[in-house]
Image (tube, rainbow, N blue to C red):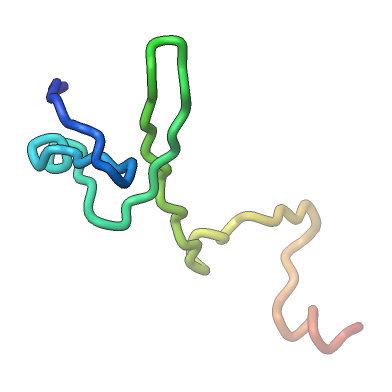
Length: 77
């Protein structure tokens, strides 16, 4: 963990020092949430949403019956 000092610009912006950006692996456009606390301000990283792949859904739906082939499933109905 690092500690650094920065100043508020006339536009109400702050610059996060490069050492901290590198330590946290933040790049331009990284989403942050900002909260006010009794001690001041708290910045939190908003995690990137992981894209789901088809492989990630394998086994998502459970079936307790006997095995059914694709042909039986689509053509027997």
